[in-house]
Length: 284
Image (cartoon, rainbow, N blue to C red; front, side, top):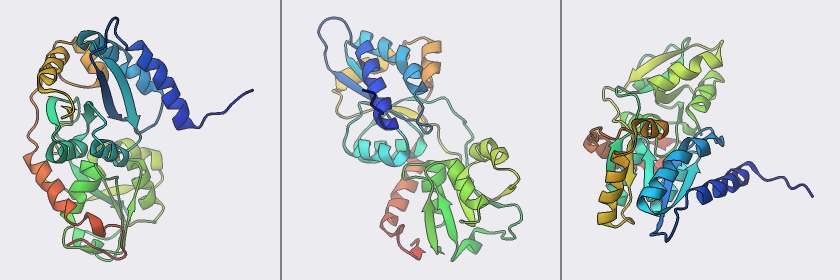
C-alpha cells in the first residue's frame, strides 16, 4: 500500500537515514544535535551537511543529528528547550541564544559583512519618513530575525501601528507590500535585491535604512555540552578543511563578531513583545 507522508514528516524521515550515516564506529560518547534554519524547506540541506556531520561524528566519536527548522520562530522554541548542541545561527537568533540561553559563539558564518535592515514601500507610495507609518499596517519577519524583526521594531519604538503582519519569509513580506496589504515591510538590503525582480511589475523603494551593520551570524555551542568537550569540538571544527567548512557556511579561522549592540536591541524589543498581537499596536 502506498502511504503519502506530509512534507515535514518526509523530510525528517530522510534525516533519520542521514543520522545513521553519521554514527561512528565503536562506542558512542554522546549525541550532538545540530540546529539550522532551512527557509526553503528543501531536502538539499541533508546533502549540504552530510560530509560535515560524518567528519564531526568521526572526530568526536558522537552520534550526529541534524535538525532543520523552517523559520526563526521555531528555532527560538528549540533554543528555549535547549534541544540543540550546535547552532548555525543568523544574527537575531544568535543574540537570543547568547543573551538568554548561555550559548557560546565559536566561529562566524560566511555572510554579508555589511548587512543592514531596511523598511521598504512601493515606489509610488508618497511617504518619506518612518513617523508616517503611524496608524498603518506594517509587515515584519519572524521572531528571531535581526533585519526583519528586532531592528525594525527597535526603530519603530514609540510608534502606534494599526496592525503588524508577521510574514514567514522576506519574500512574503515584500508580497504583502506589493499586494497593498501592508504599507511597508522590513527586510535586508540583500533580500530586497534578491526578491524585487521576482515581484515585477511592482517596484519598491527604501523608506529607511538602519545605520548599524548587522553582525555576521555565528556557530554556537550549547550549555548542555560539557566545557572540556566544547573546547574539543571547537578544535575539531577549526581543523576541518576549508572546503568542508565552506560547504556548511562557517569560517574556521574567523573572528567572532561583537554582539553587544545586537543583544541590547533584543532586550529593548523584548520589553514590548507582549503588545505585538494587539490592535492597535502600541510600541512603547
